[in-house]
Length: 148
Length: 313
Image 1 (tube, rainbow over the protein chains, first blue to last red):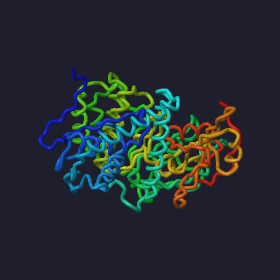
Image 2 (image 1 turned 45 degrees about the vertical axis):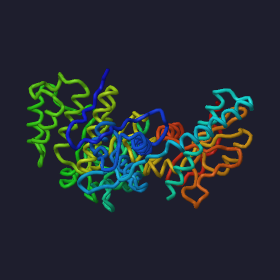
Image 3 (image 1 turned 180 degrees about the horizontal axis):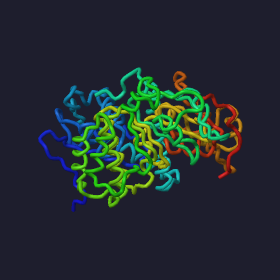
Image 4 (image 1 turned 45 degrees about the horizontal axis):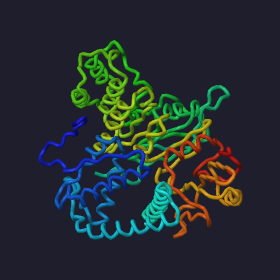
């Protein structure tokens, strides 16, 4: 069932549409960056695809256009996208071939969980610890990004 | 598209003050806001928000100091009025006029009014032109007010509490339209608001007024980079509070949360918390609420005296 279908008509339309998770606590521009990276990994976006126009994103999400520009600049720095003046921002590189890495990471995480279980942590304690570590990691990586 | 053309300033206030009798509604207000920004003006009731906005539009004359807009034009002067748009609280429209007549009237009252643009926006919003303004919903009235303000093609748009009477959906749609105007025209926006929770998405510059004075002013990214929430053992909280300015201090027997101002970008030692403490980034809402709770604290005019024990949680 489609409750709210956002139109994606027009030949030039971007294959993806952004959403925001207000509860994530993650800065808005990072959410946009991560959604593009996610779409690249899952194959929703490929080389040559156009990212949504700044005005489209702004109208859809009611966010500051500078936030979208910041996200697109970040993607350009990472070499994933390239801006063409007057035309928009286009995907320049895919993020494929990560499945083997992911398998290894998953095995590592499972090993960690077994260790945590041996140490007497229940599921909720593991989640709390993981979330706390993730937050620390994110705080570190965003301050590094800001210092650059 | 360039949303931050360097150099030019959208709004400059120098020692600005406004006195009513012997009551100061606003004093010692100095601001310097670059162009292309979306400025949120927040503060409790009677903090001086509307006074500041009315001074910027020229509806009031300052008692002390000066205020200029769009690269140095004196506020309220003929040239300033041409490039400044203003949307008053609750849009201030005539309820008995139809939408079409309201647009026609606005065209007569404003030089350089783009009637075609106003009409196009009304069509896009699917508002019937024959409808009386008084019969519109709050959200539709706000959208009509915005359409009129944008049809003036202002370089700086000033809005007094544009969201206050709107439901969540109408707020979202209003803000979406406003942000689209920023993206399209690169205009600067100054808006006052009580809706603190939605500022983070839209505002990239914050001005917080308290008791007629500027308490906090600055680029949102800079402000967020300059604050951290330190969480750690309550026993060490006093020592930490002596070293850093504390905006909000919450302590229980074992644990303490201190919202502190940290030295910005001093080499790699960026906001490293002491041993045993965890540093978290704060959001704009949390930051604004912390300062609203503590009118004595200020950011940017050098704060120091803001230690002291808060409510124990």
